[in-house]
Length: 127
Image (cartoon, rainbow, N blue to C red; front, side, top):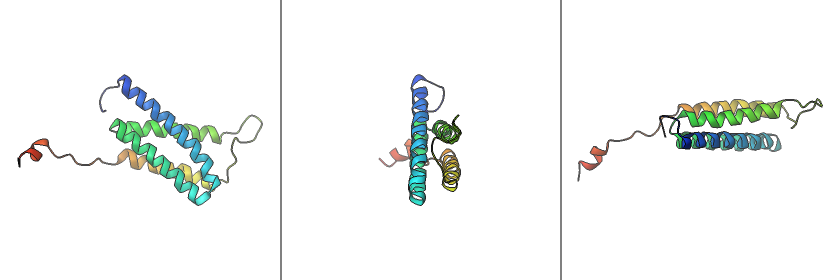
């Protein structure tokens, strides 16, 4: 799915944006609930969404769409409400680790190389 933007590619990118947002909100909840294990679970979920974005789109743009959804959710949940409190309480270190870990996972998924492809002629030359 590399190349120009088609309707299917735009739909896939919007779906990845929503999937990243949902995963970000779920990760925010899990990080403070079970701190060391919840952080690992949230980062594994992010890795799955980012890797799926790379596989679906065939490049880093899918990772970028999912990461944008995740980061927008992270920012929206961390902003204080007009009443002066936060939507979700945070202990601090877990959510900073979630932010840093999510960025690292996104960069890893965006820059990873795919499996090397052999030419079709090499596979047929034995037969």
